[in-house]
Length: 386
Image 1: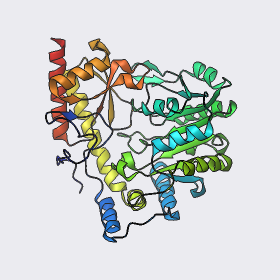
Image 2 (image 1 turned 90 degrees about the vertical axis):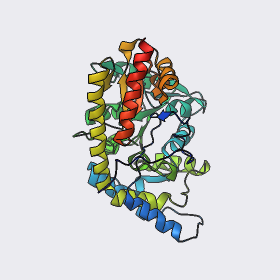
Image 3 (image 1 turned 30 degrees about the vertical axis):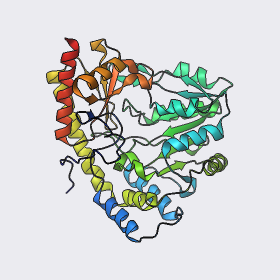
Image 4 (image 1 turned 45 degrees about the horizontal axis):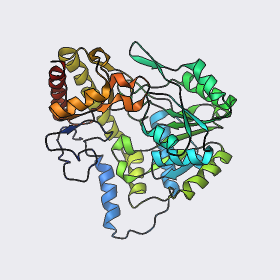
């Protein structure tokens, strides 16, 4: 019913991911090489066909679509009045940092974590506190003792959480999220949860939206969601900021408007509504393809490159590859793979923490591309080891 096999030529198309040399294969940026759901394409075509491209409002229908999606897909009940529109998760995070903290404040993150978090913190004059995740037996755990000490510091006013975690794909449990929220409540720290990868769980895994916690644990909590990763709609520039507490919501709303981040473009609303109301079958088919791709990578590495271990986090199409056995720094490894084989992977050191022992690989592509990428990875590592 849906095509995940065709190789779409994205070169010379203004694609950031594919703005590379002719011989290079990009498997680094979090951008799928599949066409989005036909239902979304139809909605966008109908919008463009009107021929009138004036200023846009965010209708109640948009928030109702988000609410319905989280009820049906994640069994999480949201209220439409909790929601604010924003032109992206990252712009919203930066705006929230500016509005809900002060220059010089501490903001806690849990490396290895999405590198743009550091930009949102440090480019705005705040200080990063790193609660490094503990890596053991192929998974990550939270260093609770250190975390509480950091949250208790007088200058700590915010924590940025990745749920599920990028780059490891780690899915945080309801128990872990509850404990995190209690600690943030205890020390009056705003907890901002980036949940952009929440729909992209693999196999039988599912994620727990932070807003599914009891209301008493949500008074200092902000969640950010978007169809952009789920349906490959990053260029639509649409996200939802979910803030249960009305006073916190009022402050964030003022910040988003001051930063000019609250007005949708031509296609943001119809594309998002179509995704949330008509995209579930496509997403189910996509996740089946991603699981097959994941299994292919797991098998291929075991057969051809057992020194690299695939970390099974349970979510995202971004694989976290443990390369520690090679004893080569991640940035050096990524550079050599690009030079020798034209393969572009993300070096783990940009995510800090123990990321210097890892590479991140995007597997949201047709099997033909994935097989080529795996061959390049194996050939490149063999050449490097010589």
